[in-house]
Image 1 (cartoon, each protein chain N blue to C red):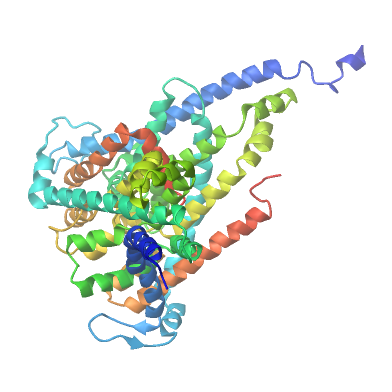
Image 2: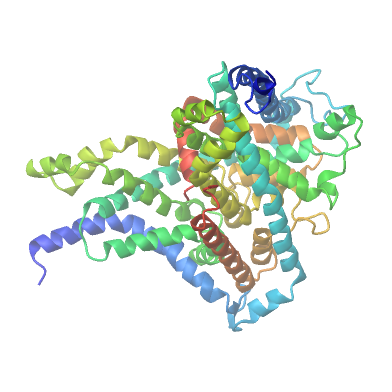
Length: 294
Length: 291
């Protein structure tokens, strides 16, 4: 039934679509489906996989490391997201000017963004070195005895959060800068004519018009922080004493070190559910107008 | 008399106050900028100066910001102890193939989505978008098992294959292609051209900026990638720079000059590339948030 034209069209379609779609199928779509199926199995890769129903999920419920990882991931988010958003907006406003040399400053802020997480994490491990690092030395100059940072269960997570904020600040700054520059100057002039103070201008012009950008920044930083891993793996490996164990680190550990493929997959689906839930929740907030700020 | 002095109408409304506020906030702004720039740049300076110290000379109290006798000894030692040069080459190969692969597969598929009519097109495109929602970590266990079955652990194909398709890149290029006026292609078809000539000579040249954005995005994500290479390489001769660097750290926990030398070697290329093509980089990274 397919004529010559039809065949030729199909040929073109295969030519254009197959490399991408085939690759996506093999390296993304099928693994996603397989991963879900895997959550119902116990498999160490040495012996044949064994169907255990919801066994992995039940195991999760009683797994102290998993709950610790979940709590630490949420702690990380609670520290990282507000800090990076507020500082990112603040620096974007400071950078949004025509001062001399401002281009250089913008360039500098972006250096950590293009650097690899591994290099940045190693650099900050060294900076945070309790005895020989720069940070505790600077603190000692103002009379503060710095903590053990990555060696101290109470300070390891704050250190990881600070490092992450430092690395991602330039990224958030660029997003906010784009949003700020899209606000027409007339709005500020009109507000100034009406006698609005700088604070009032920020509150009633900048924030509302920046709503969509803020929403975007929140979603992105939230999604990425659920997946926090590289810096943790390099800086603490989840320690000291499990004080910084996070969800992806648990996935890696179970798949990689313990050979528990099904269990690792189950944690990854919990992660997916959390990311999805958080995203949907934020869309809900947006629809309720939280990011419009009146 | 009195009533005219009453504070019900604020005296001399905006101007002087604004100017004072302007000066104050200018100063504050300058301070903030200088402080911010210092916080951004000092760690990098510290990374470089540490790497220029001799091995064993970094553990000093108080720390020396600049080495008294700068030396490349740590670079020499680090190259001797781990195969950093071959890791560098691995990173280069993996990144190059992956970037070219992503550009090719994404551009071709984007053309099929933006410029060809076929049944099920929109449904397939929705599947593309849906995969963007799923964190990479979900696929990592089956991917690893697949690589093991294929015998691709500790091989270039194992490192590269999962990275040469990009749903994000396909989406990005499709959007760019949709904005190319159809008349241009119709002219190409009237001249006896086919889909390939339309793609190669009409559509591709017109989406240059999008291709540049995707290049930067792919370049950064593969050069800096850690999780997947960590999974798929055990043999240090096959490791990419980030994984090799992490291993170096594990082996020499106190040899910070050597670790920092390794870090400098691994970030230098991408920072150089960024300094050369800043605008494209910033656009590429800003867009990567969409992923």
